[in-house]
Length: 326
Image (cartoon, rainbow, N blue to C red; front, side, top):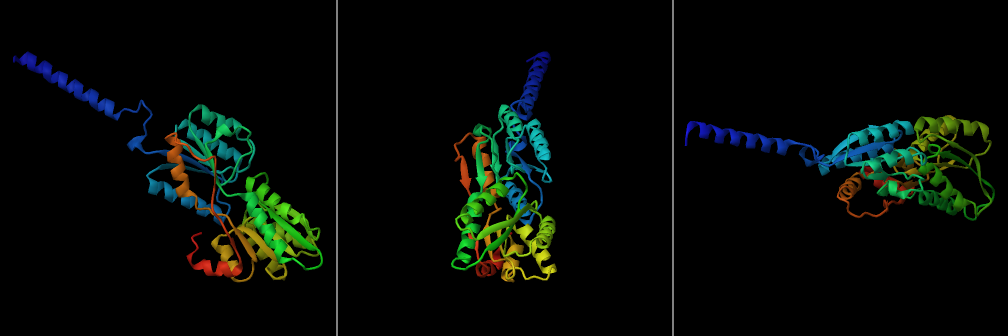
């Protein structure tokens, strides 16, 4: 072979090699670095112990599953969640998951995700859109059932006892699914007996500070309060502070039923300050990662996936406290 021919062959090999490298490293097909699934998760905020445990569960599960997590904290504002979802769309993530701050007002941004062919998973909270094609599935609790469980306990607790039962209610964030559903579920149960009267009901935004503030107002405005029904434990724990500062004994002078089942509430139950707690499990991370993989691969998933949850008396909470994860 002549030197000129040899040089031509060598040049051809180099060009082929460069072409092969360019092809292997290119991203024209939209593949993510390392082939990892990328999940955009828009969280409500960090308003409670439950939410903190939920966030930790999602972050740890993503790491364990080898999924790249893009996380956003909406600080309990819908506009922040919408911005986050639009950012995820622009970044071309594989799947979007979010826990809606409120039920309404999601159609526009979710249509944008649908047009971008990015599947959406609702976690913890539902939306009220009539277009169910805007999301692949909803993973979370049955909030109506949680409210009914709280009401069932109250009815049994006062069965056969005479006199009116004055109830104050600390509602969750106005317009949110858990606030709406826990209120309606509870109301459906107690409406069968006229002795149960909700004398005051106001939002405490699911926070301990607001729960205390609203309970202070209730105590000043209501001459007789028999029961507090709180839509989450953080509000109940804030209310306990207000009750004690007013010189009353929580769990005795004012009986308390709450929802969540977080560790701080179990401690309060062990001290007799909360009488009954309905569990709402925040550890949804592992289930969410499995669903993300399935919807990314266009596998069929159930439209509604409920978490399994129980209820706790003070005795049961005391027994479970040492091993409680959240």
